[in-house]
Image 1 (cartoon, rainbow, N blue to C red):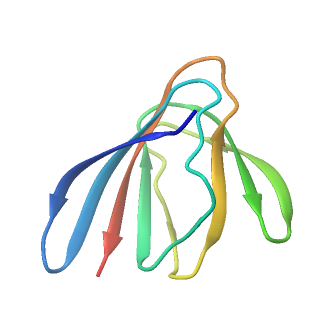
Image 2 (cartoon, helix red, strand yellow; image 1 turned 45 degrees about the vertical axis):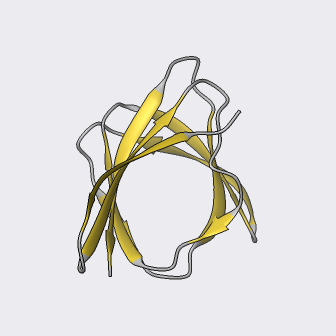
Length: 91
């Protein structure tokens, strides 16, 4: 099952997307073309499948984090509930 992206804003400087993950949903393998910030809307765990291995991360609602261009991974909702976050990409 695929995670559901909802584009909220796109300008010449930013792309803001809300990602909704039903239980078990995933983004699929991808590489980030921009620096980005993630703002979790719920508290829960996501599984990251990365070139170096697999890890589970605990995210807290409102606990933002930032990553640089080039991050490669697949993101999977391992919770038994819907998970969501807002992703802000910097062009």
